[in-house]
Length: 288
Image (tube, rainbow, N blue to C red; front, side):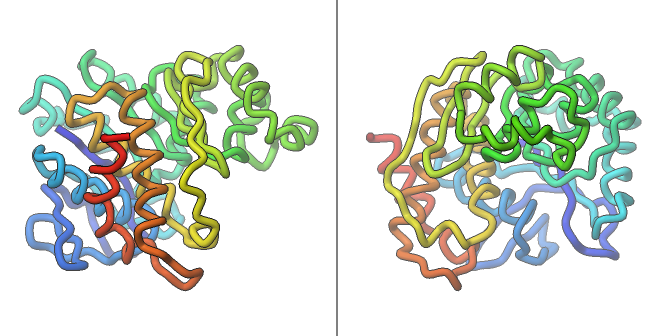
């Protein structure tokens, strides 16, 4: 089962959970319509499309509203720390993707400890959860991070507790991908696997680059926010379907790029407008 945990920038939204579906441009949790906003909404929508196309169960989501105060994130942390997490018990193996949670080191440690009690479950984190995992010293407990090059520089600087404090010489070397990987793994500040997003996407396993994906290159995707979120949703669905993490990462990177190429976007295009190309892009990516 794929379980997505995250926040939405909706001030009045309390903790909500259920199976989600994205149909006809609408994102719903058990009939409740949610706003389409870059972030966790896109992760959920992309995962929903991918899960349906692959032929697996809909994603189960646990979300709360948070406009930056941390209230919704803390509500989710407390829920995960204190609940028996009964939904996870319905499957012998879960993929748990954490998205747009405001860092809280003490809560995050407790939550990851609780989640890792189920040794078969796979933990995936976006940049926000990646930040807190690194700062809390629990990065190695995660199975996959999805940083861009700037975020990779943060993982590579063991002394930095926040991306704003990355030392200048490391930040300026952010295009030295092998060097950043070596630093991050050398100080145990990376997950077991990485997707490093950029002009070329790098797939990394245990500190070694195993794939580099550069095509198709779609320059007009660059100003469209949310393509990292769609990538996170796609890779989560693929892992939940039984593909190995590395295979899922490679397929997801190709799919995300092909989705952009098939949609022929312009800078004004919204990411949710191109998600409908995921099935065709997946078909092509799996054949490549």
